[in-house]
Image 1 (tube, rainbow, N blue to C red):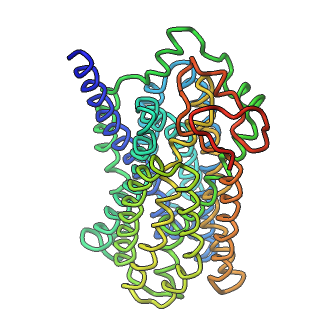
Image 2: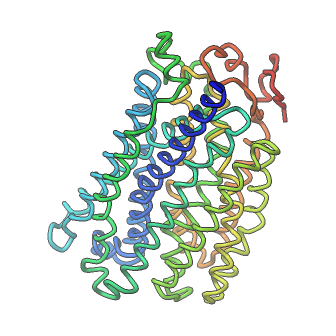
Image 3: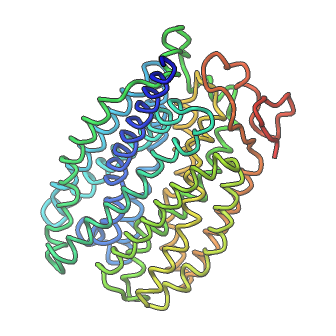
Length: 461
């Protein structure tokens, strides 16, 4: 009877953690994505008007990318204190920082009223968003994965991953409501774009209450009880595991480039521009549909990762993504709204399959004592290599070549980079994540390391 009660309590805790991580990451990424959406639609005219339409759009997209450069700082800070003080406090702090930054963007003066001070303040707040995003993800995935039993880590880790497409869906959906009904046309540029940013106040309040109610990760509680926290986790990480950091970053780069290209700031701008000429609200609703498809396949990939392994799921996802990099723009360039839906729906299948297993795989390749630092810093570096300047690069390629074909080749190259990294990393789905297994976790997780592979079904390729 006691075992039954214990199992029931564990399952209840896991459900509470899953709910808290998905709510928190949804709110966090809503805040982050709402900026990318607004950058593609209005920031060129609101904050960068003197530069002209084309250069202003490049500057707006560059402001999206600048925040990625500060993600590693957030990852270092959150990783350091997350490995020393716990996962839960970092989740609460990053949520508050992101919410405050987002809300303040909603009350910023425009260039017309404040001059150069307006874009400067915008960039400073975007940097704070980047610091928050750099630290948030690692804590969320570790809370989910470290609470889960071995055979369910893939699906448990998929829950915080679901917050990204849900955040995108919420951001594009709210913006579509503003452009289509509440503040259409010129009203959106004058004041409507501010409302999605101001809504962050309400969302952050909800997220704060949910995350405060979650128990600390059992792995960290064990580390703290045994007083085995690493003094400088980042230094230890790069001294012993720099290859893992680099490879894990490459694994994420191809997915992140595709995500910010297809469902972030570039597609709304491209599809509503002169080349395609679709309606702003119609495009936003299509992106909302793409985010929903992304959500579904991210969810399914968690189960698939537990069934066939993280590596195979990734390879299927990147294969699907590679097949769509050219059809994506072929379909969009027709100017047909149904074909835009088809393009985004098909493209986000691979996007979801190559994103859902990431939380579990990242958690399993880094030792417990530096795990928060490892997953956070790898994710942040991967975001810089992948999505940071993907919209800017895409716009520059369009300006230089006059065709979207160059953008497709760029996405194909980023996908190939990630496939190479996936093939090098070992799959370690059964490894014990606790601090008791630190020695086994220290065994290399790449095919470059020829020492004895860990037990529990680890494969070399």
